[in-house]
Length: 179
Image 1 (spheres, helix red, strand yellow):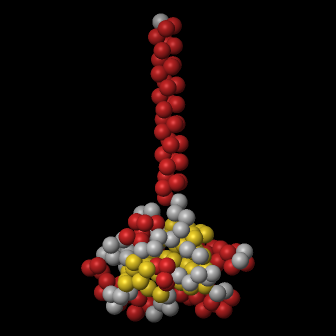
Image 2 (tube, helix red, strand yellow; image 1 turned 45 degrees about the vertical axis):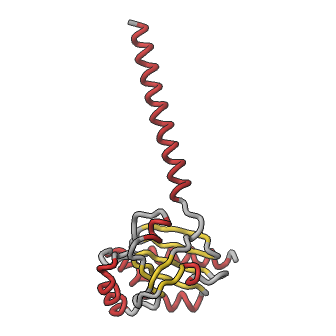
Image 3 (tube, helix red, strand yellow; image 1 turned 90 degrees about the vertical axis):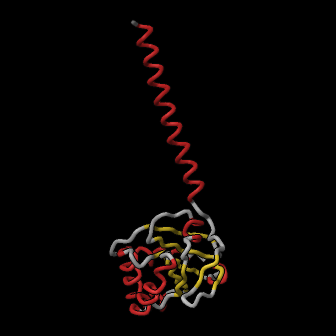
């Protein structure tokens, strides 16, 4: 009986060890896989169909905010609207660019154009209809907001709740002051 109990304990410990090892392995791989350090140089297009590499849209030595959004994503629209309300004030205080990358598929380009025209957002708008940029960033969720400088990702945030724009502005100030 004692041998069976000892064997059972060893199996339980081995099982726990294997589960923990697998967990940490998955955690390690996911951090290394999904923690993108630089912006991928992917072609994006504008509403006229002209293609631009994202590196050409980002000015060197200047902080750039990149927001991935979609027309069907209510938090995305709320975030871009909230930033739009304070955008002019931010621009008075800080030197930065803002790029909004729409990740809707190609069938929704007209809807995205109508939305952008109706909102009169002051941002540079690009389309990622095949979601190549989104995929290269290793993200599955939107809204996805990035702060980038010299093509390096300094900050990344997923989701939106009212007030997140204030936190984003704090982060912009920190990165502007550190340069």
